[in-house]
Amino acid sequence: MKLSRCHGDAEFLKAKCLMNCEVAIILEHKFEQIQQHASDSDPSSQVSQVFEKSLQYVKRFSRYKNPDAVRQVRETLSRYGLAEFELCTIGNLCPDTSGEATALVPSLKSGGRFVGDQGDEKIEKMLNDLSLIKKFE
Image (tube, rainbow, N blue to C red; front, side, top):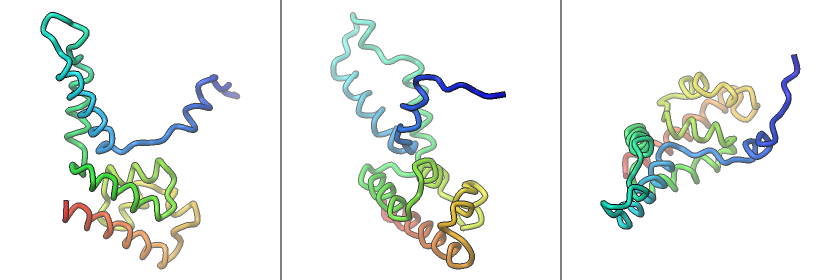
């Protein structure tokens, strides 16, 4: 069976993935804007329940809270040549070992970038770089 592509698929393929901590920063900023312009008499200036739940979710599952740390995480992971979804998965889940990282993101090994013992060492270095960001946050 062949699946046809929707018109919006092309746009989705070009979309940039965001880590939970990045989404939290964006939603926090929007929440502050809404609160500044809110009036009790205008229901359109109220925050929806979906918005509130989304904000609570990304704040709860964000590993990094400080905006500078969030920027550093993206910059650090970008240096390792990760695909967007790999970067976001590693940034969201913060695995402790190279084995855990490749179990969560199998494409790290299958992509040929992190093969063999040297690949494991490179992944361990990447994870160590992330843990240092968290430690000094």
